[in-house]
Image (cartoon, rainbow, N blue to C red; front, side, top):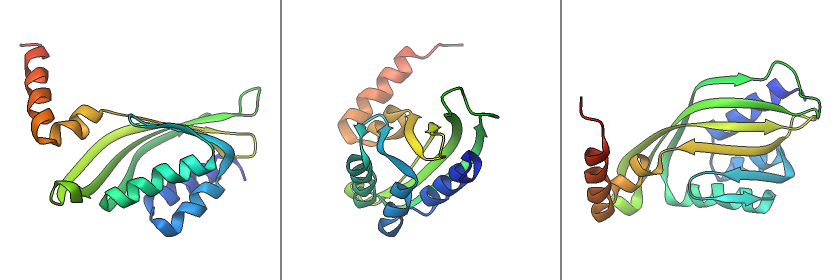
Length: 152
């Protein structure tokens, strides 16, 4: 499968992510796939699957929306291609009374010469995206953000 078709299939699995799609998502990855986000940095299919299974267990009504994506025009010398994906994730947090939660971020997705995902690196602000929603820690982080912000 070429990189563009692989990327489309991978993002489609993320957009429809549920327990039933975990195996389909994993099938699009290499055996030693790396996943990194603000909370995790894991390697291997079992660990990759565990991160997503944990997310599905902790969040309700998950909605993954892709805003933009870009894929390198041609493979590098080693056959790899990198895609950059801008996205939004919306969900409900059962542990916080079902409160709505949304975060925007981007992912750097590395595809091997066969079009399989070998790395998925997420970048998003955990402080404003999640930590500020927690009662005590959130108050402190909002205070620090206000104090450190440039006054114009």
